[in-house]
Length: 487
Ligand code: GLN
Image 1: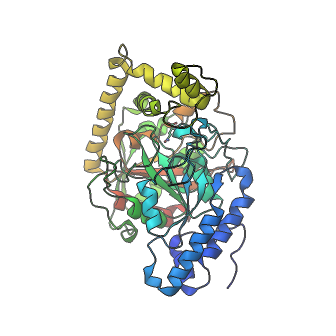
Image 2: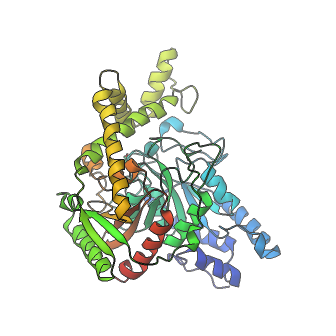
C-alpha cells in the first residue's frame, strides 16, 4: 500500500478518497494518521485548540473494520475527516467559544449538524480556534491566541472561522465546519485560498451552535472542492425538532445536482465596485471573470444598489443587539467561569463577566445594550430593522430577474497581524461584501479567484435566492472548473 505523501493535500475531495478506499490503496486509519501528522507540522499556526488523536484513530479502525465486513454498511461520509469550530458543540468534548468565560466547559450534547455528520461516519479530528463567540474578522480576538495564515504567517487568516480555513488550507483535514453571521466562513476562506459556503438562513439547524446573533448565523462549510461542500450540506441540512427556525423546504441531493445547464443571469452592483477600499487587483480580476462569463453566453448586468452605505451600520446595530441578549446567559452562575474575587451576588455577575469576556465582546455587548435601551431603541434598533427589511426586499426583487449576484468576497487580501486590533471600525468596514447575504438570509459562496501580487489569495463571491443552493453550487462548480482554475 503506497504511503500518503507528506506535506501535500493528497486528496482534494471526498470522491478521490472513496476511490482510494474502494481500491484498498488507503484506509481510514492511514488517512487519519496522515492528517494527524500534518496537524503536528502546522502547529505553529495555532489552528487546532484540541486534537482528538486517540478518538479519531479508534474511530478510523472501527470504520475500516465495518467497511471490510460489509462495504455497503458505511455512511455517506465514510472517509471524510473534518474539524469543528470552537463554537459548535460536540458532546462530552470541551468547548470554549474562544472565551475565558467558557474555560473548561464541556458540551452536554452535540449540535444537530455534528450529530448528523457523525451518524454518516465522518471522523472529527479536532476542535479549531476562532474569534471569541464568532466576533471578529481576524481570529486575533481569541482566548487561545491568534491563528496565523498558512500562506504567510505574518498575516491573519481572517475570521471568525480563521482556523477552520487554515485547517483546510494546510491539509490538516478535508473539510471544516465554520459559522457565518456576517462573513465568518467566506472571508477567512477567501483569505486562505479555499472555498467557503454559507447556506440560506434556516437551511441547517443552529441547535448546539453557541449563539452570537441568532437571526443572522448559519453553520457553513470550508473545503477545497464544491463537491465536498454539497455532500456535507445534504447531510447536515433539514428540519430539526430542536430549532424551529429550520426551514421545511426540501433538502436536495446537492452532490448529485452539480452540473449547471443553460445560461445564468447574473447581477453585480456598480456601487460595490466603486468602493474606495476595494483593492485594484481584486477589482480587475473580478471584472475579468465577469467578461469570461459573458463570452460564455451568460448574461451579466450592472444593477443599482443604493443601500450599500447602510449595510455595515445595519449589521452592527442588529448583531450587537442580539449579542447583548444572547450573551447575558454567561453570568458566572449557570455557565463557565465564576470570579474568585466576587464578594456578593452582584459581583458574581459583574466580576465574572468583566474577567471572562475579551475586549471586543465587551464592546459589542455595550453597543448592543445601548441600541436596545428604552431611549434609543427606535432610533437605532427599530430603524436598523426597517433597513434590513428594505435590503431583503431589494434582493427578493432582484432574484425575480437574476439567478445570482456576484461581488468580491473581501475588499483586500488578508491583513497583517495586529493591523486591525486597535481599529475596530476598519475591521467592521471590511465586512462590506459578506454581510448582505446574512442580512437577507441568502446562500452565498466564495471561490478562490486568484493570488494577488502580494502573494496572498482572494476570492469571488456568488449569492443566490434563499434555498437555491443546488443551482448556486452547480454554477460554482462550473465556474471553478472552467474559469477559475484555468486562470
Ligand atoms: N466579522 C463579522 C463580525 O465580526 C462576522 C462574524 C461572523 O460571521 N461570525 O461580526
